[in-house]
Length: 588
Image (cartoon, rainbow, N blue to C red; front, side, top):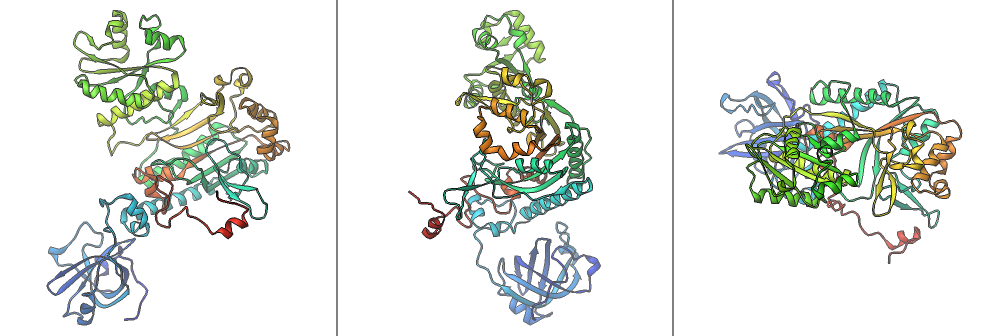
């Protein structure tokens, strides 16, 4: 048989096709030889179809089939038949039919792959990434990439329906490092000068607003030279959005509409909108995180009022320093052993705490080495405030506010795992976190940094505080949080050059530095910039959550390892000396 194009995919044939002559193309997934009759499962990205070689049906095809091995690429022609009743496979969509083969072409032979092309294989990730093109044959990964494709199509359709224009922004831009390191690209034509790969299209999308393109979006690659984690890559994808003549509520309305569509078309779930909202301060005090996981009820409680007049020096020092005393109730954990408590103490120390106060709740008393420092009134108020019952366990941390709340938030998540509070089938929880601080203080450098980025607008009523008390200024910024992961973040932007100059001054950026780094944006604001704001979704992370995966590497076709290496094509790699010479670069 000469090669023929397929008439059907390997996931398409049903009982309605019985009697038809068909052509299938694909890979050999599984081979079974039952004493003369050879069964081959042929696989493509659409599914698997069983084909049958019988010497009495076609001897030539049967003889050729004896050579077939795993991952051979084949084309078969044959007749669809109803499977014998005792051989039905209800696990396959095609499991009620098979194809009797009368022609076979081996399109390509294959060496034995280094791992089985199956889901849930026990193979080290480095090996799978080295042979990523084989790993991508696995149905689970293909399903994730197809889901990602579907989400991209939903995105484009939704924004088009709502009057947005997709505009591509440059990949080679000016280096304006703020936060993560830029990837730099040397210029051959301009000796000693460099482009940067964009960490985001932030300045370009603001310029598009100045240009009158009042509703912009883009599915765009971004680049940050930073240490990697399960949910980070050097290159990642954003759904980037910007709108003119809007306030926060307009952006929330558009974003919630998109998320409602994702929930319905990807998860077949109805999302109730408007979404719940938490202020940054409330999120930190209740959950110890600005991306709180609210799928379970374990809430923290600020206890400062209970210990205002305490004689316990640890708590008194925290209150006097305007820090925080925060408590967490672990229901039913009062029987934890000293060893278990030591493990949890080490856990919080690993997050920067000096120690952990634990208290067992007994029938008529509280049991802990620290109880000798507590008055009877403090004990009663503590039990009442946390609604503690006999058999429960109380944890308390104290110290600098944000650091201590973050640590207790980490302990909250750890206890949720230990208590199995997050089920695989838990309803997803989506919410807004708002009213972030505009600035965050860095102890090491002794200066303020922008919590989001330097183009974020302060609340109008807080503008006077920018020079006198920057730490008190709240931003018109917001994050979208799904199941404890930040999936989008944005803000209303500064749109006039005077306020932008105040922002740079508060960040310790001189007029000269601001003009050098951002002069093009500042100049644009002088020509009539509209009020504008936007948001950027972490598309990889969002696809990961919707696909039910735990690493963004499972929704990216060709990801890097945690050490920023592509094992498949061995990048980064050395380059030819002549290339370096052309770029005016010398490696020392």
